[in-house]
Length: 89
Image (cartoon, rainbow, N blue to C red; front, side):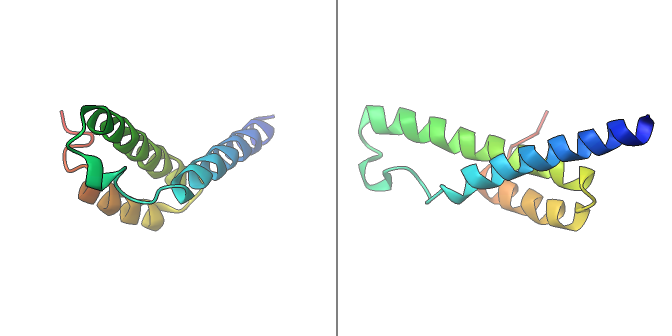
C-alpha cells in the first residue's frame, strides 16, 4: 500500500514539474523593459517577475523529490541571480 502511495506522489510531483517547466519556457526576460518608467508597466513587471521566481521555487522543491538534486542546485543559482533575497527570512 505504501509503495502505491509513494508512486502516486511521484506521479503528482512529475505532473507539477511538467506544468512548472511549461510555464518557465514562456519566460522571455524582463517584461516590457523599455517601458519600465510607465506606472502600469512597473506594476505588471513586478507581478510577472514574482510569478517567475515562484515557478523557479516550485521547481527547486520538486526536483529533489524526483531524485534530481544536482539540477535543483543549478536552479537555486538561477533563482538567486533573478531574486537574491528569495527565501530570505
